[in-house]
Length: 319
Image 1 (cartoon, rainbow, N blue to C red):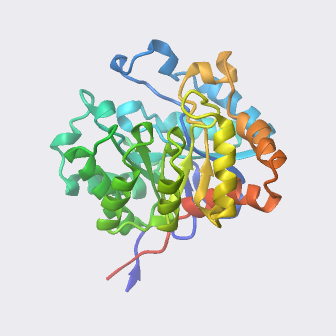
Image 2: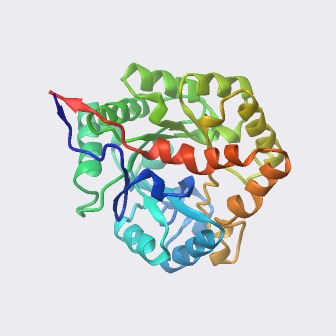
């Protein structure tokens, strides 16, 4: 057997591969540059088109103790990998970019994902991971897939299946989009059937709907739980997120949680005159966990060790 071309034991960022120890506190689901279609509503609030503001936002994040960020803007949402590379270099924050696709709500009318076969989707993902995205040499460090609210369409199932198969070829991690926190068990079923390694899969937006028994079952299967809507109390209050995390730690599942805010709006960024900004988790949410009694070892596990393990490419072999 020979090891396949990839980044085994390393984490792939827009500036190149780094060791897992280099990341530090990591936000696992964010956006820095987007170009959303008008049909996604809310006008310019969803348009992040000023890299200089992204640099300012990340510099504050770094001052708060942040070290890395997973940028999950896919092609249909305005991915700009050249800007991501410049933002990372100027801010000093590690940035992991993504390949893959989100859900029909995002790609409909932008990309004809429904016409692509699983094989075509795998080829696209593998190329983005190993060669470069959008005609550049900037390579993705993670694969994204997703589903609609309360259903997984045929095209979405093909993307999820392709993500698992691309992982098998490259060893890259996978992250998912669940619309309103729904369909995570179905995503898990599809991924496992296609051969995904659950220890390198994060199921996203689960804190939009805090169903403890469902989340515990997914964690026990090996999946990472993406609690990545922190500060968005209109979905679930942060107080409930804190208590759920404490409960997971008490149940011995602290190794299966990562944090983020999914701040994809101008109104969420301090550099656009809004808030809470990317410093909210290290400066406010982590101290909240600490006040509620979470030990330092568990805080480090959730903010540093779990993201690092998730994002590290696993070893794969091919004949």
